[in-house]
Image 1 (cartoon, rainbow, N blue to C red):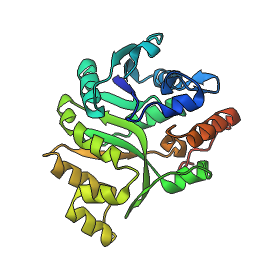
Image 2 (cartoon, rainbow, N blue to C red; image 1 turned 120 degrees about the vertical axis):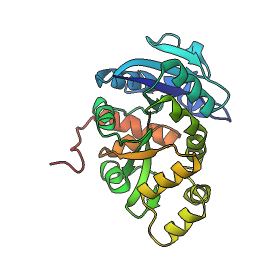
Image 3 (cartoon, rainbow, N blue to C red; image 1 turned 30 degrees about the vertical axis):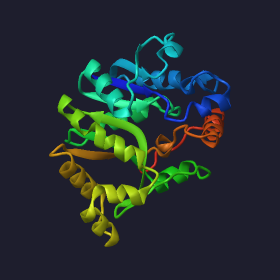
Length: 255
């Protein structure tokens, strides 16, 4: 079994999406009549793979009613992850409170297909994402083996993995700025990208170099909607519509 950390903080600039939705905290925005964070907790529990859940929030009092542990988040995302995983222990799955479409099957698939690395990141290819949600607007990182979007699913296999959290935070901050992300990876990655040779495995190699030997790798998710979270009003409108439609989707790349 694995523990799970749900990040429910708010980025600098205030809780504008909560104001748009008319609630006191972004995590409490209702989707299909259920607060986002409750949907995430429900999916984690229903997966049958999670034995303990911890929520890290900048406003823990607003989420104190939840039937899980809630702690106050630290000043930065990386510090919140370190404190949360330290409290939980490893291995730990990390996701976010705005991953409102999260489904138990996605959690099981992610955990069943982890690479033999210390850190794993869930990603989805652009064709899978757009096939399921053609009206979504996503930013994709173009690599030689496909165009990818993050899925807000992360895995830390051991406590030593925590030394890569700050690097992960920097990558997360640049996830919608592919050129800046390439510059962060360094000149070898830029050259590989320019010559069409930058693959997910090469990115993992560069991460290992930058983190002093910490191993990392992707889990390529066959669920396009796993790449959709709720960051903006248009995301909220889309996710609410998808939940209201509640149409079962075929699993991309299967059967």
